[in-house]
Length: 249
Image (tube, one colour):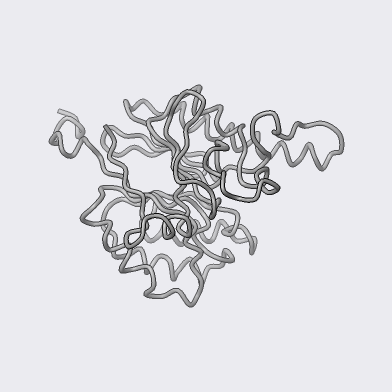
């Protein structure tokens, strides 16, 4: 009997807690623990959708690792743009990994019969407004970053052989969940190129952060639910427990 088969029906209905944009600084010690402690009784897995630190320093990563120590369930994370600010994203990832967090960057991870695929993602715009690789080399380089992130996500999803798949990103893969932000900055909040892998390798649900003033929920073109779990957004809409809890069917 496999590990997944050995679980009860209740366990198979995995409860996922997701949150992003924690922006932990060196002054954040003790501030997140009361919130994170509630994950223990409400979910089976915690997903962290980028911008985990404010400036991407090792000191901030150590503060976050101590805050996360109250969570005994598996934790899966992707980094965000703030985690790259100081040029030490690899150190941030290492500190978190050493504390037990599974940091994904074009990788996949399986818990029971649920597969998780994660990337940071990138910007570039949505739909007909998606920036194309034409003109100056700087534009082509910019677009290549978005294409590379989309390919990493596709590769991670393609490796999964589980009946249920979950995608976590920092940047938004759909326009729906950035609505509420100033329209001028939509192209910097995500990219439709990230939606394409979610259609080629359909997922059960996708989570992202980054859009602090966006919308809580949206859908891909094929109807997959997408949740914006940016902490500032969740605080405004969910009140005392600003964590998105989703139970997989």
